[in-house]
Length: 217
Image 1 (cartoon, rainbow, N blue to C red):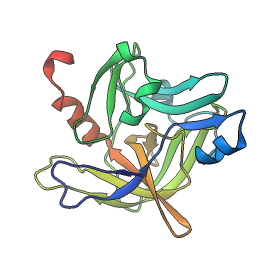
Image 2 (tube, rainbow, N blue to C red; image 1 turned 135 degrees about the horizontal axis):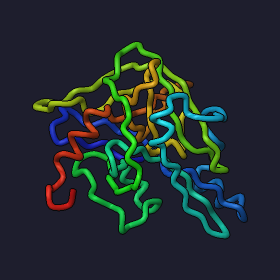
Image 3 (tube, rainbow, N blue to C red; image 1 turned 180 degrees about the vertical axis):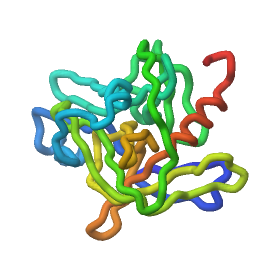
């Protein structure tokens, strides 16, 4: 478990981070300790929106014993974002910086893709993309439940939607019905039989990028 932190949030919420999807090949006991997770969502042949598809970056790390999967998105020419807890999946020499109070890591990528972005809307259907345990593209669908603001903030802290996303969706994009990028997933909270997915609105992502020291941009 991890604690979501916002410098201006009125209260703190305890949620679980989407650790990179792990596939341990040798030991069932190790699989259990790693969560013994199965792939979340359903297989996807492609991301529905061409600009987001061009901006999507699958993240992977592997050895003879284990593999880890995550995702990232190019949000500006030459700049991509993922979750801070995916740092081990990103080449260290490409890292620009990490947000102080949010689970966001920015790094350089040669793509110059520009994505169409929008704000999340309560009640709107969404689709989120991530990687399966075998490195395959997966998609999860849901409906926006809450948009949480914070005192003194110019952008919301996070939003939630109900859906089947899990390990491997870390740092992946959330799209609205028009295919516009509205957020980046970072965690979840199980409530009974339902899973709430937590995501940063794209406006919050850009605000955190702008807050990084100018010298490292």
